Structures are given as structure tokens and as C-alpha cells.
Image (cartoon, rainbow, N blue to C red; front, side, top):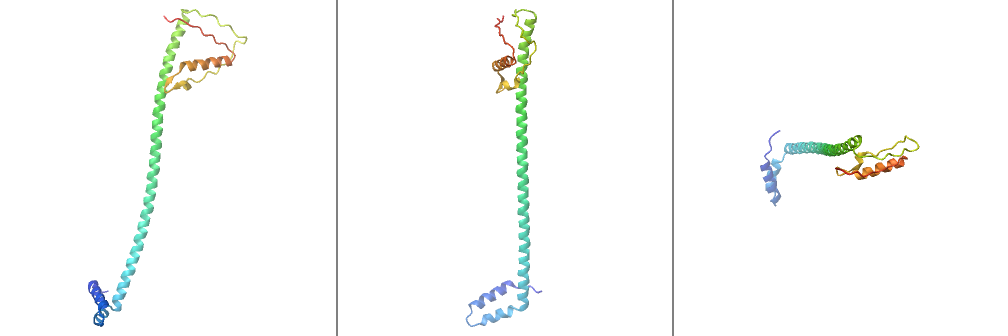
Amino acid sequence: MSKIDYQALREAAEQAIHDDWGYDADIFHEQVTPSVVLVLLDENERMCCNLIARNGEIEGLRRRAAELEKIATDYALKFQKAQDALKYAVLMRNKALSFEEAMQCTKEKYEGVIKKLAKNEHPVSPIPKPENDKFTVSIPDPKEYFINGVFQPLRYERDVEQAIIKAGGKVSWQETEDN
């Protein structure tokens, strides 16, 4: 195939359009031969095929970008869930530490009372025995008596007292003077 002088072909076509007498049209017809037309058609067809192939590539790239975007979104959601779980674990650990500290304080307080009772520093009036010496009490879980990480002993004592009464026992509170 021969090379086509596109510029000369264009100029001949433009002059052939503007000529009323047909002289420049003859030059145009000399330059536009069947072989030139076939080369132009082949080139046009090759360009169309390239365009279709590139459109397919572009569509494939669009699909791949959508897949990657979906994967990135999934990873972002998983990362957010992991972060939330970690924050929750830290919060629960901090609350557990607060609970342990409160339980330690309560344990120390009651150990002191038990030691005083063991030494008989404070006389305790005998508790009348119920008809049935044995009964079961469901003591509430102390973990439920924390508000913002602070143990609520009065609420706990009230609910323990109610549980004892509900089980058939009697509660007798006695005030003591602390030295």
C-alpha cells in the first residue's frame, strides 16, 4: 500500500467543492483512485476495530475499579468493626478493673467487720432461728450495681435484704458505733 498525502487530498477536495467550472474537480478525481479509497476504508475499519477494543478495555477497567471499590469498602467496614470491638474490650476491661477495685474495698470493709465480730468487740444480739434452719437465698450479682463504674452499696444491700426475706429469712440490722 502506498502512503496517502492527506494534506494534498484535503486541498484538492476543498478546491473541487468551490469550483463552478469543474477544473479543480479533475485534479481531485486524479488523486482519488480506487486504491486510495480502499486504503482509506481499510484504515477507517482498522480505527473502528481499535476503538471497539479500547472501549472493551475501558469497560473492563471500570468493572475492575468497581470490584476494588467494593473490596476497599468491605475492608473499611471490617476495620471499623475491629476498632469498635477493640474500644469495647478496652471499655469492658476498664469497667472490670473498676468492679475489682470496688469489690476489693467492699471485701476489706467486711473483713474488718468480721474481725471485730470475731473479737466480740461489738456484742451482737442472737438471731432467732427460723423453724427451718436451712433455706436458700439467691443473692443478686454485684456486677449489676455499678453506675458509671461506681458501686452502689445501698441498692445492693436493699436487694440482698429483699432476697433474704423472699427466701423466708429475717433481716435484723443493728447500728454500731465506729470508734
